[in-house]
Image (cartoon, rainbow, N blue to C red; front, top):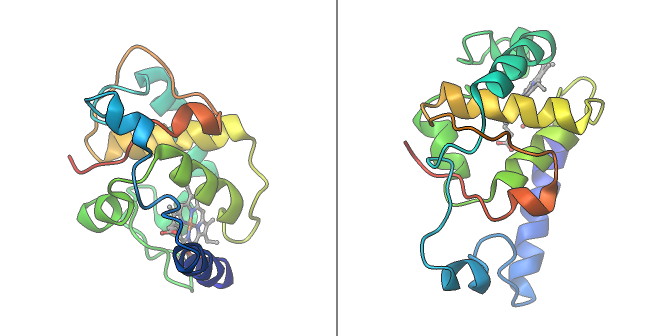
Length: 152
Ligand code: HEC
């Protein structure tokens, strides 16, 4: 909760200083014409399968193996469905990667390897009906920034 409040304050402070932070799209992406999104087959089946196994081990007991949430006393949110996809809409995949990597698992945050976190992100994309492709999502922030979350 504290982390979330701090993140909200960070965004507010950023806007107060006139910066758009992650809210606006970088001009370079707009200049490329068509924006790359999670609808473009950005992860592979094999990666999502690995991610599912890691999810069950590290996340499922709070967010439930079927991702509907509610498994912890603090009330873990659902990670599938309209609220999840709208919460991340138009944000770069790097935001999901960093948020999960630094705040989850809630009882032992920041303990998973980056590769495990990005595999779990690919499983979350699969579970939210975004298609698989031939390449894997890399555990690299700069490469994840140009790919935006969207709604199915
Ligand atoms: C001990 C229980 C617990 C575990 C384990 C856990 N979570 Fe959470 N998670 C929560 C709770 C409670 C919240 C809501 C409060 C918060 O965001 O801190 C949450 C929030 C989230 C959010 C929303 C964050 C946001 O900013 O909207 C995501 C995404 C998430 N968890 C993913 C994961 C993933 C992926 C894992 C496994 C790596 C995981 N969680 C493991 C309890 C847990």
